[in-house]
Amino acid sequence: MISFNYELDFTLEDEQSYEDWLSEVITSENKTEGEINYIFCDDDYLLEINQQYLNHDTLTDIISFDYSIGNDLHGDIFISIERVKENALDFNVSFQEELKRVMVHGVLHYCGYKDKSESDEKVMRQKEDEKIKMFHVKH
Image (cartoon, rainbow, N blue to C red; front, side, top):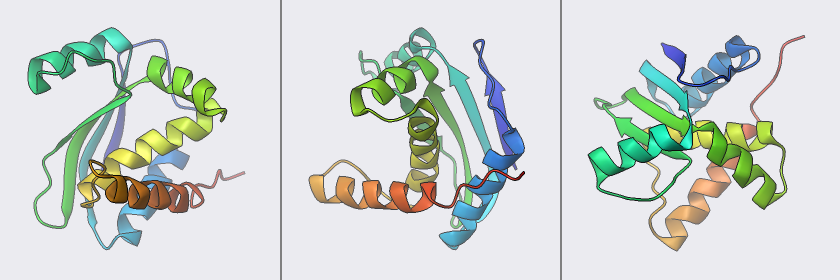
C-alpha cells in the first residue's frame, strides 16, 4: 500500500494516478508492494531528519528509509517540495516532471539501484527516465 502524507501546504493532484504508477513500477521490477509512505515536507523538516538520522548538515530533495524484506518493498520516503521546485528550475524541467523523478528515485533505491558511483548514477537516471514514461493520467 502506498500512502501520501503532507507536512506542508501541498497535495498531489490525483493521488490515485501516482499510486497506480508506482505500483506498476514496483511490479515491472519483479518486486512486491508492501507499505510505502511518502512524506512531503519542506527544507527545514528534511534538514532536521538529515542531521538527526544521517549526520548530514545539508539540504536534500529526498531521504528514503528502506525497511524492505527480500522482494517485499517497505519504507518511508521524505521529499522536500522546496528542493524539488528549485531543482526543476535548475534542470529546466517542469515541477511535475522533477517530482515524478524524485518519487520514483526512492522506489528504485528499494529495488536495489544505487547512485553513489558515476556508473550507478547513470543506470539510476536511465531507470528513472524509463519509469517516468510509465506514468499515465487517467481521463
